[in-house]
Image 1 (cartoon, helix red, strand yellow):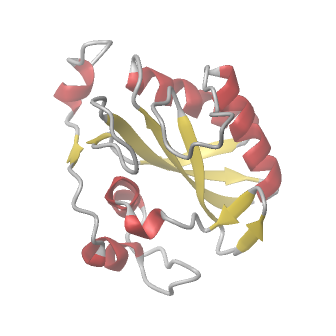
Image 2 (image 1 turned 120 degrees about the horizontal axis):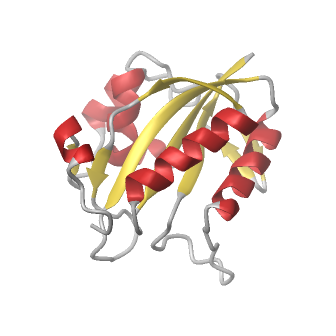
Image 3 (image 1 turned 180 degrees about the vertical axis):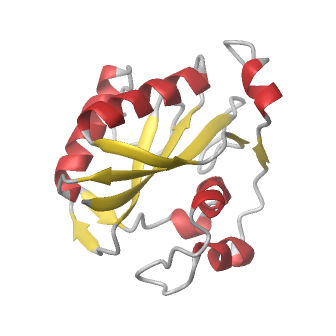
Length: 174
């Protein structure tokens, strides 16, 4: 079994519900979710929008290859209603986004898959929830633990850990 870390995000509709549905599908199609971070409300990264994101990181145990995990994630995103931008626009509002952050300690570089995720060390919205569940995980390219990457991250965007009260008292379309 391989340990995979996935980053999930949503900034449209019932954001937490979309993440929860994605996690249910991940458990059915990919493997057991062994750990999950809290939910974090975050500013958009890489584009301008008034809609904040909800982000979460999960650790999954799987017997699938990294490419098969990616294929399942793309199907899960499509099933939940994600439309990928045909013009290649990298960042936009989205119902759900699921990224492979780490696949064991493997380094994968192919046209459709980069592992570890090539920008994760620059993004607080990934590092904060990842640090919550795996602070001592070593980035295989940079050879720095997650807590060190977070400490040295230059991203100043706001990332707020949601309390249980925040999660259960949420309006559906906020």
